[in-house]
Image (tube, rainbow, N blue to C red; front, top):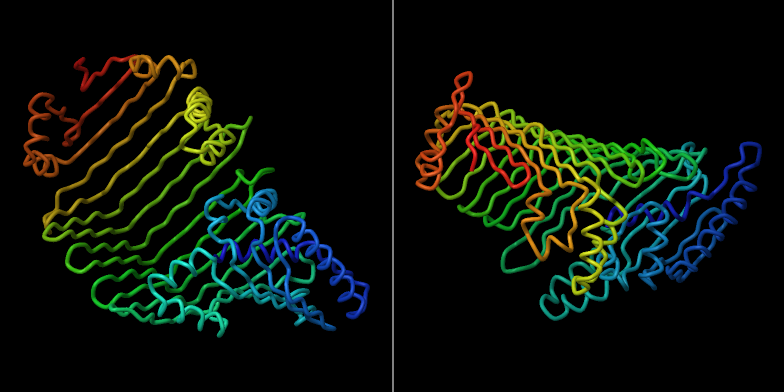
Length: 441
């Protein structure tokens, strides 16, 4: 919801022009003209504008999702990627927008966006299943508890804002509390297009008595546009602490989670790289406890036909002909997946240190693949696939895995190699032939 809200106010405000040489009255009038133009554009592209009230230095109106199909096309053109199904399910939702011109020394335009009405589907479902929850949410709407604030600077090339803190306990057989604090953001614009965005959440938590608990602390995320398209971008994120608890069945905690991802588009083919590290992650499921320290993952996906991939996501699952055609278009570009590193410095099982493990893997589908022929003869697909995997595990971890009868059978048939004090497996698959540690199968 926050992303959609920001996209809408961005569309509304970005075309406003600030003239340094103008007096404040003239500036306000010029900006009003631009807002009028933008509202007209929104109406032409599927949005409804209701109850508009225009004052000397401020105005108010209601923005609703009238025609989802038009809105989808418009938002995608503006660079706000919205899934068709998600937007259709928001039909009937309304936002109240309060705009002020020249509110303070920073702001050329200051806006408050609050939820005015829930989607029709949500209202119908809650009326049937949980009218008490619906009444509570409607009370939050009346109190403007679901509110996004955005300020645009005098040059209209920068913005900052926040999401109003939430601390709500919802009525139910099990008391549910939602807490969201310190949600802020800031960014910059170039030629009316998002260039950078930095977001921060101090704390986000969900509690359901003693049954379920999820707590996230100090999330920071950044986005930077690095090229000509929305796919040329870099993102980073960090989380100080993430906990999840489900009665006595499941517990998880991650400490100091960090990551970065980069995407680039060249000749309509996407290359995406992602790296992440976790200082410590602990998992407990019933009586089983696992802990990993200094865990890393580096992965790259190359030669993805993004146009075909996006069409495939929107294709009717019953349209097998279209699905096959798009799948072949994707698979015959020489798509590659490279996991250059998946490792943990120390694996701890049931409070017992087991040493480290490391894995790297690579897979590619040959561009000569004929998917239609492969559907008739799966061996053609096997011939087009090439892959290799390298696995290293400490002797202690290897011995622990040997306690599983299935793993024991495999390891008896294919014993590991010994390298630098580690148990090692090298697997290669090329043109239908598999070799493990040099032995052909």
